[in-house]
Image 1 (cartoon, helix red, strand yellow):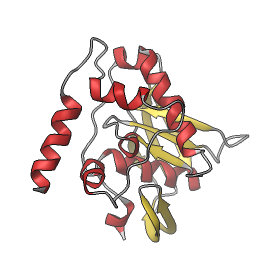
Image 2 (cartoon, one colour; image 1 turned 120 degrees about the vertical axis):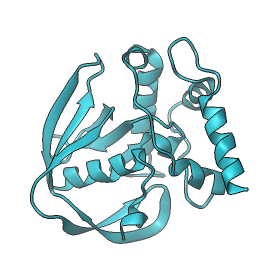
Image 3 (cartoon, helix red, strand yellow; image 1 turned 135 degrees about the horizontal axis):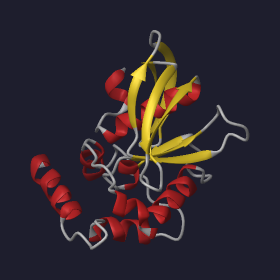
Image 4 (cartoon, one colour; image 1 turned 30 degrees about the vertical axis):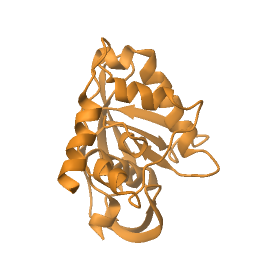
Length: 191
């Protein structure tokens, strides 16, 4: 039954691509709310199956589409909402199986939230260190996870240009946590 549900979810998400490349299902999820999107949790079987799926990249055409900017805005609104009050969120957590995350940049003045399409961890330095983590998709639970505190990331700018950046400290931990989501990995898998 679980395999059947998983197949239905993937079929629904991949069916009905629009001219811009976003599927009708993705468009529906993004446009369904005024600002805050529903966060998927492991408590729901269908949500849990979706959270375990790897994500696809966002094409240059999709990055140029106003729908991408609406998704980015709503992901930030969702993670910063009083109900969530998080430090990061990934596409699959709002039902979008695309490589996009919103991360609070504690390493920048004003600690802004920024959105990173097509994010990848491309390098690490030092040893992994333990730290407590929680997750919007795993409510009411925390655990100690080993993560690097010094990483390199690559991502696409909204204009479609690939760029790299070195990130350190707690912000590096957030990027690793959120990037795991894009590969279908939850922090509980690393406990």
